[in-house]
Amino acid sequence: MLLKQILGDKFDLKNFSNVETKNIKKNSKEVEKGDVYFSLSDDYQKSFERCKEAFEKGAVAVFSNFDLPFENSFKCEDCRDLFAHSCANFYDRACDDLKIVAISGTNGKTSTSHIISEMLKRNGKNAGVIGTNGVFYNGKILPCPLTTPDADFLHKTFFDMRKEGVEYVVMEVSAHAIAQKRVNGIMFELGVLTNITQDHLDYFKTFENYKKTKLSFFCKEHMKKAIVCADDRSARKLIDDCDVPVISYGIKNPSDTFAIDICCSINGSRFVGNVCDDFVEIKTNLVGEYNVYNSLAALSVCHSFGLNPKELALGLNFINPVEGRFNVINLSGTYVVIDYAHSPDGLLNVLKTAKSLTDKNLYVIFGCGGNRDKDKRPKMGKIACEYADYICLTDDNPRLEDSLDIIHDIEKGMDKPHFVEPDRTKAIKKILDISKPGDIVIIAGKGAEKYQEIGTEKKEYNDFDAVYKYFKDSNPFKSRSREFYDC
Image (cartoon, rainbow, N blue to C red):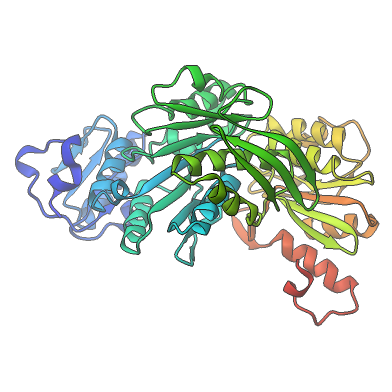
């Protein structure tokens, strides 16, 4: 492909633009002869060293944010933006041939993406998903390096999806991705904002910066229409201050899409939805009020794509929960819930929902990630004390921090007795040993993750497997498979 075709109208190289290139790379160690390399670092020395390495490996041209002393090295105003647009061009702008939905927000991205995709598929649409749990389309399940991958991975995925007949793509768009311009150059059919609550302050430093980043995405540069939760104070600002049409959804405030007659149990939820004046009766396996919100967002998206009330009900009433999001396991009358909740608001939603579903004891097992936002740790400890009867603090992904230091940070917000067991498998066993029929045990923070990050290693671990191991070791029918017990 010619370099001028990759760059499009974002950068004019004049006489050098007819150079033939083999591939587009952002990692200098992966550069091969004939590639074009983009240095995404904001550090001069790192860019210098990486561009030098790229040339040594055979790059025909390099781009960075700096004037570097190399022939065929080009300075650009914003290398991340140029890289994103160039990746779209390199992969034949496959994104333009797909109806792409962006799901943004602190909580609810994965579940809402899953619900929308399943609703579309149950109504005969070919839909794919890109997000935290992976890439899904046409029966394929592929690993995804980040919640919102970098532009090269993203546009290669769009290209592959288009080749296999995918029509709709529902993808999670994180605040990091917005700040790092990974999704620049994509025109989304719809953008959904679920909520904005505290998270990732290790990166954004202040909640105000985090909020501004989220809100900045909702504009005509990125999408044709926005779908916004009217019950979230921060998100609601877009209803009156957005340069694209907005559809609102909610329960408490006047909205275009809303729910009435809501009834939630451990087995699912029922409600009547008014979707832009179309009524639909919903009975779904999804548990909790926050899943009613996720469902309202999904109903708004699918209604925008032309699904009628009958199709909306068909799509939503047969949805299974996404793996790792309020997954309920019945262990001889004790309900174990595995959920990804890892922020204060996420933990609050899960515990508040569970508390409303039992008149027995509510247990919670959780920790916080190391080398991440420390400010949220005592807040999560306080929330646990407010709603749970018994609390066990354990490891999440401690990474390079001492796990007991993380636990001590959580304890700063706590005012009731609790257990401490850093070993997550042992923590689960300890709580399940004392739980009784009718109790609910929340295992929060990791959801469907298949590993724990301890030190610099990713060690094999999964909450579902830990619960199954407990069940198998305490049950006489040990030869039965995990699937037999619906674990």
